[in-house]
Length: 153
Image (cartoon, rainbow, N blue to C red; front, side):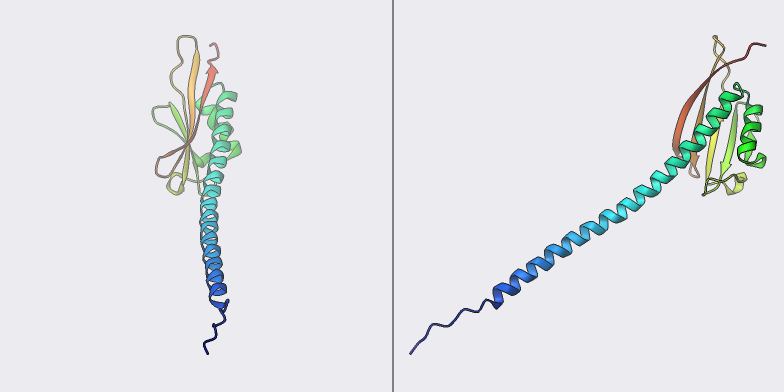
């Protein structure tokens, strides 16, 4: 006599289990990629935050000094260090050198440079300067225009 064979559910169960493991593995791989990407974004965000703070500090010193770079340097020296700054030979810009932790350093060890430029005043006596933060490769991180009315002589 031929009796019909009972169908075992084991094969179906194993197939379903394998499919669930594959879906879980794919979801885990996507989550790991998201976490790695978020770490890079957080690092970039931290650098940008520090750049904004340094540029804003330099711009405020420039405005408080009335556009005078020597006085701007003195104000920045109080906040950072005198040996971390250099007024350019043409007298139209000041550089502030910062290390990887955004602390004052000399030019040789600088990872970041904040530059405050002072062009000649326009016909109205307005000095339209700019404060810019750059990384070691020279790529601009953040910039802000700075306008000061030149003091009457």
